[in-house]
Each structure stands twice: as C-alpha cells, then as structure tokens.
Image (cartoon, rainbow, N blue to C red):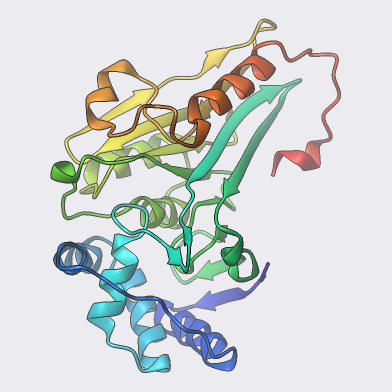
Length: 291
C-alpha cells in the first residue's frame, strides 16, 4: 500500500499525484459506454459546482499526465455508481463491511474492503493537508476519492456500494467523492448529514458516519431519498452500527437492485451484529485498534 502525503492547494496536489503516475508509468483502464460517458460528464459538471477544489485536483493530474480532462473526470465520476472494474476475467467484487461501536468509554471504527487482487498493489492510505480544509487520512483503491477515512476533527466517513436500479442513477456526486467531501469539509456527524442532504446523490450507497462524541449513523443514500439509520444497543448498553452492501431498512429496499445478500452481505451483517450485540464489557480492546 502506498502512503503518499499531499499538502497545499488542490491543483498542486494533483500535479504531485500526476508525477507519481508518470514515474510509475501508470496506465488507466478507461472504457466508458455511451451511458457512462453521458452520466460521467453530467456528474463532472456538478463536481465543479459543488466541489471545485477537487475538480482542480483532477485537472492537476490530467495536465501532468497529458490526459483529456473531461474523459478522465467522467471515468472518476462513474466509480462507485455505474462502473465495473474488469482486468481480464476479474470483475469487481464489492464486499465491504463497516461498523462503529462504543466499548468501555472508547469509540471504535472498523472496515474491510474486499476488492479484486489486482488492486492490492495500487491501494493507498493518503495523508491530506489541503489549504482551507480539514487534514485527513483517506484510504482508497483509487485516488483523490476514497472508500473511507478519518479527519483531524475525529470524524470518520466510509462508504459501501449498493447495487442501484439503473433508472434511478442520476447526475450527482458518487459515494467515493461524498466520503472525500465530508472528510475535508465536516467536523461532526451532524455536519456530514447536512452535507448529504444538500448534495445531489448519483447512485445508491451507504455512508457510515462516526465522530469523537460517539454519535454514529448510517445514511442510506439514493438519488430519490436519504434514510438515516440509527445505532442499536448491545446487551451491555453500548451503541453500535453496521453497514454492508445492501440497504438494511425496509423502506429503502425498493431502491436496492440486489437480493440483499450480494456477496453474502446479509451473512456478513449478521456475523458482525451477533458479535457486537454480545460484546462483553470486560473484554479489553487495545485503543489503537479503533483506527
């Protein structure tokens, strides 16, 4: 896993990333069908409107590597919503489980991100210190956008993919850029929720939010509706919340195109649920494992 560090203005951070790509002779598997091309361009215009700093960061990358910015941005805006990763016979696997819980006065967050093996060598944990924004660590199998992170205000944001109904995909901000936006601009769970309610959402996803006060929610997001799912309580009175690759709330099932057990998502949910429900307060968990 790469551990790059970026600071300063967004365009220059993009230039630094672009130079890393040039040094490593990076190749980009950009193959968009007509639907993805149209969707990506429309989403790219909304990214410039709602998150212009990151649009500048992408511009810094494309200026450095000499790639068409519109095509490159369109590709990035299809990630996490309507883009399949294909490397020969390896199609993207979206097996993500994320959860937060309190235990003996401490707050913990954990996640797995089961993606195709070919992404292992290019995955990154990036330390960002942008001008006029929070400092944060962004964990990603991509770049600029991300699956999960924590900022210097103690706010955690993470996404899990939900299979969308194609006719519900709309121009908007995709899940991996929602994570980046929240980490850079928000300090608390409440601020993150306000952001999600104010931004156009591109496709179905879950966004789990946890802050240093112990507040935690899962926002079940869809272009047509956002539903907040509240934490549950263990047998010893501790809060916990879990998200996998489907919508858990029945009212959101109509926006989920899966059988709600995609890549054993229901089995994964129940495994974590049963463990956290019965977590013994006498069990010692090292505090460093919460990040």
